[in-house]
Length: 423
Image (cartoon, rainbow, N blue to C red; front, side, top):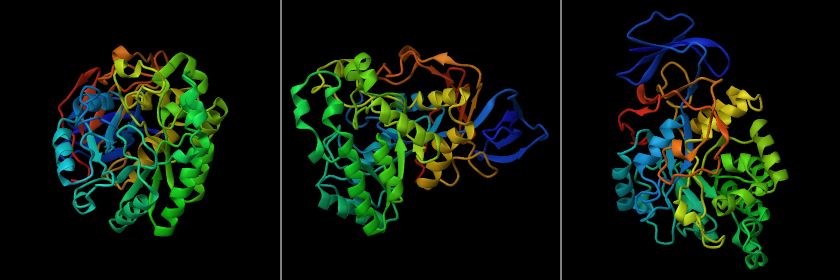
C-alpha cells in the first residue's frame, strides 16, 4: 500500500491518493486518508495521470541503431509517459502474424505499457494481423514516409473496411502526394521540404480519408495534423485528431536554425499556421497531443534536405513542454491532462488508464510545477542523442508510476514492467 499525501490534482484540488501496489490500482482518493504503508509527501506537487503517447516509432525491429524498446521506453518514463503506441513502419513492417510476434517479443524490454499498431501494405495479411492483439490499425500511410508504406486509395478503403469489422480505430497519415509541389525540388535550402509537402496536400487527404470513413462508418483518427485546415476538416467529419509538439511549437521560421534536423512528415508550417494550430489545441478543438517520436541518428540527419530522413524525437519532452505552457498560463493543467491522458484513453479504448479515479490503474506522474530545467540532449534518454527543443524550458517529472510501480524517480529507473495493453 502507498499513500501520496496532499497532492494537487489537475483541477486544483488537494487530495490524498491511496494505491494498492499489488493490484496496481488507485483504491481511494480523499482529503485526509489514513496513512497506510509507504507515504509520499506531495505537498506543493502536482499529480497527473500518466501520459499516453498514441504515436511513437521505437524502431525495433530493424533499426535498433536509432532507438530500442529499452531506450525509447526509458525516455518515455523520464518524460511522464506511461503508455506508448508503436507504429508499424519497422523492418519487417508489422503487417502479419509473424511480424507482430517479433515486435511483441522485443517490446518485453519496455519500462512502460504499450500498444502495438498493425500496418497496411499491398502484401499485408489482414486475416493474421487482425487476429493479433493490436491496439489500432495504422498509421496507415496515404503518402510515403519513413518505411515506404504509402498505399493507394482502393487498398485504403479495403483496410478501413476490415478494421471497422473488428471495431478498430484507423490511424491515418494524411497527405496527398499528387498535391506536392515538384518545383520545390530545384531548391536545396532547409525550407524546401515544407514547400514541397504542401499544406493543401494534408487538408485534401484528410477530407478524402474522412469521406471514406463516413461512408464505411469507421472510427478514423488523423495523425500529426499540422495545419488548421486539416484539424478543421477532421473535426467537421467527426474524426479525432492529434497534434505533435513540434507542429505546436515550431514553424518554418525555425528552419534556419534547425536545418535538416527540422525535416519531418508532415513538415513544419508557417508561423501563422502554427499559431492557429496552437489556438485549436488550447480551445479544445484538438483531441490529443502525440509526439510522432521518430528518432534518427545525428549522422543520418546531417545530410542534404533531399537525403536526410524525416522525423524528430519527442516522447521525453512532450509533457514537460506542455507543463511549461501551463505554468505560464497558456494552457490549464486540466487541458494538459485531457490532451495527454484522458482523451487518448477514451479514443483508443483504455478504460482503466488516463484518469486519477478510484479503480483506475495507478499510472501517475508527480511534478513540482514551479521547478523548471533547460532541455538538453545530453540529459535525455533517447538513443538518437539530440532534440529539436535544445535550450527550451520544461517541467520534468520527479516520479513516474506504471500500475503502481515506480519506473522513474529522481533520475533512476525501476524495472522493465511494460505490458501490452491489449494482451
